Amino acid sequence: MTWWLEVALRIVVIFGVFLTVPLLVGQMEHKAMAHMQGRLGPMAAGGFHGWAQLVADGVKFAQKESVVPAAADRKIFQLAPVVALLPYLVVLVTIPVGPGTQVGVDLDLGLFFVLAVLGVAVLGTLMGGWASANKYSLLGAVRTAAQLMAYELPLILSAASVAMAAGTLSLTGIVEQWRWYWLPMQLIGAFVFFTAGLAELQRPPFDMPVADSEIIFGAYTEYTGLRFAFFLLAEYAGIVVFCLLTTVLFLGGWHGPFADQQLGWLWTMLKTLALAFVVIWLRVSYPRLREDQLQKLAWTVLIPLSLAQLLITGVVKVL
Amino acid sequence: MTEPTEGLQSEDNRSEGTGSTNNGDASVPRKAIPGAGLITGLATTFKTMMHRSHTVQYPDVAPVLPPRTRGVIALIEENCTVCMLCARECPDWCIYIDSHKETVPAGPEGGRDRTRNMLDQFDIDFSLCMYCGICIEVCPFDALEWSPEFEYAEYDIKDLLHDKTRLGQWVETIPAPVALDPAAEAPKEIALAEKAAAKKQAEQRTDPAKETAE
Image (tube, rainbow over all chains, first blue to last red):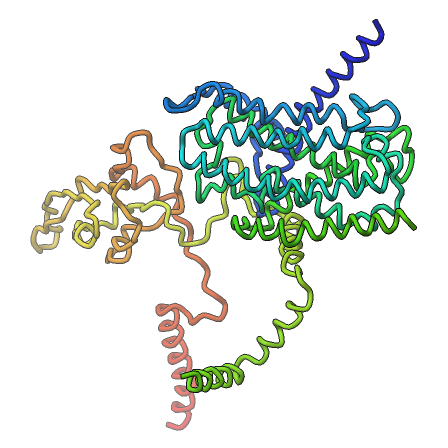
């Protein structure tokens, strides 16, 4: 009985986090981006500094008609948003937020599982783009695929460096093994992981799969209403998950300057939100890379860097 | 073939070199640190975030409009003589004027009756007006003025035709003339008056001297 209760509680908490933290990041994007451009951002919805803007957006999306194009592959088209969104929820289950049992499920193969499932999320975009029967959607999907190919490798190589240093694939194990000197040691890895994560999320400056000035909105062009909202939620859930992962792997997760055991989850959330702010900051500061520049960055910069990181970790480990 | 182009290039370099040696020097440190531009970009956005935003919360906060804002055209009806200059000069013909003549009887001490133009209709169609201000410039009797009011949007385009009562209501929103720049020349009228006053004063000063001499 208590076991069921605990499982139910964990599911509710994780689901709650999954639904609220992406909105928090979205609101932060609204406000931070606005102020970086000398604007105020949403001010009206909800009264105080537009805090309810995303709730209002959600209500609007729910009211819109969900159109399926006549030529579209109906089933795939309708399934795609769920495929894009669900993996992030699944990944969230395995990420440790605090010390001890503050994790949905402590998997021995946590890192492996997480990286494998995150790849599935990109499939949702591919499915949507293919099933839309629209040339812009298809172009966006193909670009997504190319980006996935290019950035999955540096992502995995830099994550492997951490797993090597910790001697375990379990995410809780990695955080427990974490020492402060990993910060400088894994600096290159952290940079590569974060950059590759940005590219995998199709966030600016790596957003050519949805480049609105070229291909309207890429794979999401034909989507309306709640399905479109699902894709948007997937993007922000993706930011949360990737920032959480970067925190757990490279920034020591729940380790903090004091009160690790009591305030562990708070340290994790603070680091995650700081990283999410960096994601937004990069979006405002940098223009979009061209498709070939993106590929060049992945294959000639990030992969050699991640291999160098592996080498450094290996040498330190042996010494 | 290669020699002349090389010569040209070197000449170009030389001619550029005289003027742009400083540019060359400035670009050296940029090249020295790769990615310095990326850091500058981040710093710029962060600095902007730390400053106050430029947004004015318009419906809640009235905007601070510059003097001479072209909001709406006001009509001072008493000044209008129905000379029709504004209607004729208007580039998109959005001023409609109609009038009739009235005889003003002669005064008690002789003279003759005079005719006077009475304004019946003075409409400006603000759905056509392009706010060039030519009508205001051309009016010889200052019957038209700019007012900074701008909140006269309508649900029906027909309601953008302001008649003379509506145009007259804008008069009270005409701001006082802007004060002159302290370094500016005095207005023509004042300059003339001051000149005359100075001349008179000089005459007064010399007059007593003349009197004593005589």
